[in-house]
Image 1 (cartoon, rainbow, N blue to C red):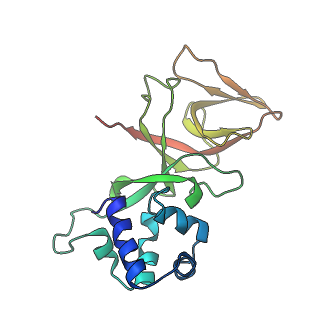
Image 2: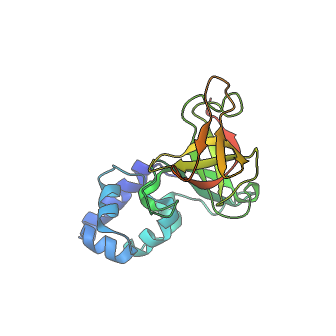
Length: 204
């Protein structure tokens, strides 16, 4: 499959040959002009989940844009899972503005429901989750005690990974690393649970 730069080089060439403006591309794809502009300026990754919209806008086949050879069908169907960065308040979790990139996964290896990746930052969940790991999250508003969740605390825009414990009217976000302190959640500092951690992967 083509890299982000290769995809955008093709779209740049088609944009020039077809004399299309950013506004027209945005209209054809049903996307915000600002978002389309960021893709062409290379300040945001091309949204692989919208490849069909871009292919239709430029009158090409999606497989051509991605450089997929259908003569060699994969044994397992794969899907692109978004990697989230900062999460804008009020946005759906997987809104395009929150997505920093994608990871390709076999569809049959994923749990049901909406899933996304977060990058573990820091050492608070070691040794369970190493710093820098890609953690697969299944979107859900609640988790059971002792399950690891991705949560937003107060007005933070970056999710944290912690083990959840309920104590009366309080929620405690517990690190697995004993060098870190729990975060105590009350009505004064509400928390938004984004989902449950399913597994993680690391890059060698």
